[in-house]
Image (cartoon, rainbow, N blue to C red):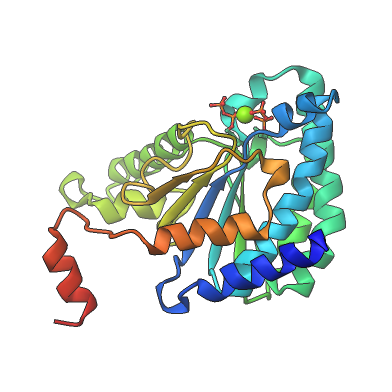
Length: 262
Ligand code: IPE
Ligand code: IPE
Ligand code: MG
């Protein structure tokens, strides 16, 4: 009965979503795995393992309603500073998950991508990742972008370095540097900026994720810990997004008129 209720509620929430006003790109800071495990008297790694189900559910939910890009913060630059055994377990889990979930990606026509300082990943992990990226490269329904060994400051520093090199080589003049120049040198260059950023686990911070790209994103925080996050939670975030007025510095009347096509 409880299962039926969940299925009914999911249909309700999903049907309330306005397909004309979907965010094209949703980014998620998947947080709270450690606390979820601790609450159950288990090791932190158990929480990371359970978080895989949430990734699968969220990817399916996003693809089903027609989101084009889903970026998931899976491992930050700062996460390398965690105890070595946790870092190793996370890397192993990543390899195992990429292997086991490639079928989910294929079944849902999802193309896997990655952003971050990927050279820092260990060899096995890097190779598995590249293989899955290659295996799914012709999929068309949605891009799922894993942020691995990623931080916004790394991204911006790396972009600055590349731009400086072009200036030095006379390929670019300093006065030609525009916002587009910066955007096009970031790891996210192929993707539009996310319109919606979700963070789980009740923390109200960005933790060095996509700082440039979320300049005008709507932020959605939920107390749910990541391993508890399900399709309904994703749909709730989308519905919440759709109730907001995005003004981009203008006034309400201007935005309302634009929506009416005036
Ligand atoms: C998110 O969960 C996963 C990663 C950062 C890799 P955490 O491991 O940060 O879990 P909490 O925040 O300690 O509960
Ligand atoms: C952010 O979570 C990074 C990921 C979700 C991968 P953290 O758990 O590392 O963030 P802080 O340390 O609480 O800010
Ligand atoms: Mg955390």
